Length: 123
Image 1 (cartoon, helix red, strand yellow):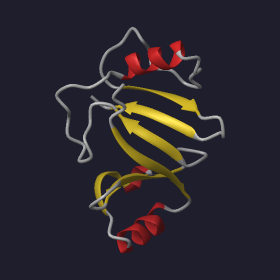
Image 2 (cartoon, rainbow, N blue to C red):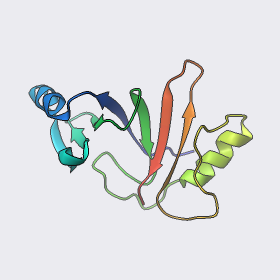
Image 3 (cartoon, helix red, strand yellow):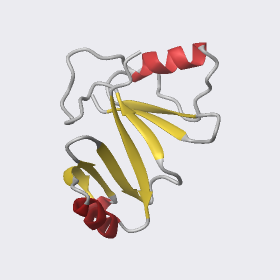
Image 4 (tube, one colour):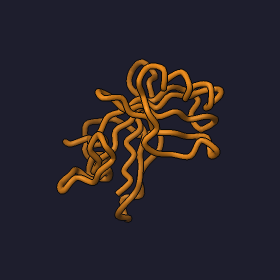
């Protein structure tokens, strides 16, 4: 199973304050819209997302079909196939991708400790 690019999606209280903080740690914005409450930030070694008012908790995020720079991969495991495999292994999604569609979609599962895991396909 290829889950795609990994990042941590942070539930932030003030996106401008969080952006300034992470810029001091060497991150730079590579996508998103601060005025819409979200930014994708990258450092040389990792990617984080800042999300104001979108998530209740920090969330582990995987993006099937993307590399660490947000570029489309030639081959990848579709989110619907990932979801089917998870269900077959007894993992019940808390939100599901519509398996009758193609293209962008997402599903979410929660690990045994209550950590949300978002599988968010943009291609």
